[in-house]
Image (cartoon, rainbow, N blue to C red; front, side, top):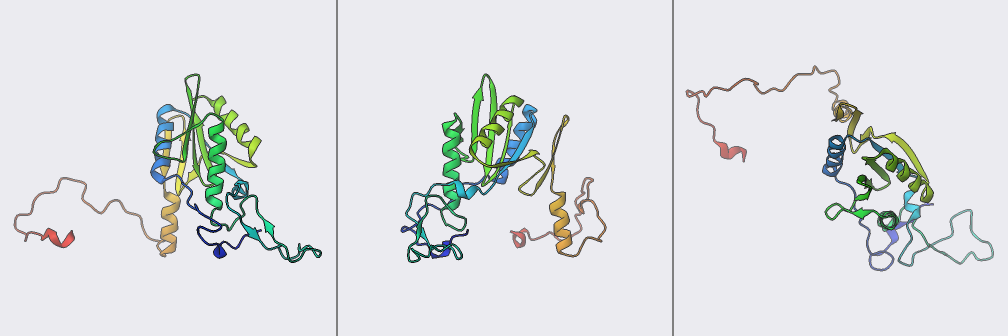
Length: 225
């Protein structure tokens, strides 16, 4: 089912609709910290995440076609939890996940509200969320396994193993470090603009020391500001 969110009115049947999501810089910092501490980053996905969020506002929907009660066809349903399409669905899901993690001993980042941290006997477990995609890792592998079981006990999850792709970044984790690139993104750009058959070259700028050419006319730098 998908709700007709376009028919909602702000202040009437929804208030907050914004849900914090991890910034690319935050994910890169997460990866850098994992490389520094030499722990593996894992990825999981919450199935139908928006359906978990309880609603604070009163929201009513028509009976769906094919499932209309013939004895009460004039009645409507009041939603207890969010549906896809509702304006507040992303926020309701974030609040539900945040509430769950905080109840299990996690603390929320003071600057980044999508970062959750917990500590146990000198070890640390970090969790970063991007809507229904979650990356996590710990200095103690057992804490990562316990977190996976914890999430499965509350939500329907898909465990995706070691993190290999996130927000357009390809990630390769090895004993020698964590390496990131955007080769896939670059290939998509080349394909989009019909440049897949072009020859690759290095940087067009000279790599050696540049000498000043005193015989040339000086460039007006203001044209490029």
